Image (tube, rainbow, N blue to C red; front, top):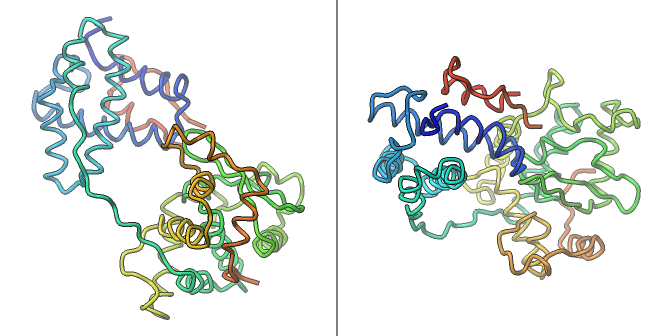
Length: 342
């Protein structure tokens, strides 16, 4: 094998290193994969080489910088540029141990600096705004009842959209004290207390859908009309539908710009406004970026429950799938395209 050819290194990185040694989730691997699909297409445009023909030496510091600049010129944000650079650096950090003879080329790419970004504005709703959205679904229909529960869990638990799609019935403890396990980024689970009202909503939903037996504990809580797992896009569509209805009902409470993360931001702000300590909010949301304070951020369930109850208002209603390693008979772009497909 030509150790300078980049194809087999990319294959090993995605198929073995990221899911195996790093334990990255399918969502993270998919994000990294999309970066390399874009990078390989750019390299083909510049060098005229097919992805399978590219060598490590083709990936110069200048070429990667030009790729990142091209992303911005095409309308991508600085934040997206930095995310793509982080994925590229992660691969070349891995590569310096696999191909030390190319260390000079690799070091050049690792020296590329991230671009400074302005501080993002947190877009969040008032308690009244959240209430208007949560009261939009028609809870007398099966679909509307499901949607009401999705919206309620998005707000009450501060869950990411991807976390809501992964909830299994067995993740929910319905007996007091009621809790739910959310499966967060980097395979990090966290236990979130549930209010009595939300617990009743879940019990009603499981009864209506005939999923209240112990034999359903490994089944997903939410599914689409054909019984398959809801996608992140599917949940985002559901949320947007009711946000649009709420905006018609009370435009003063619902901003024009609304992302799926807005419910999560809203919960965090409401907790903060209720006087909940920031370290508990970080623990509640599953953040782990401030390494030095992680030991203080782990609050027990009782503390989190008291914090939630202090902020709660009457808002609510009554594995990684990989492919075989890349080989010279398979297109590298096809390998990356098929990666992480379920």
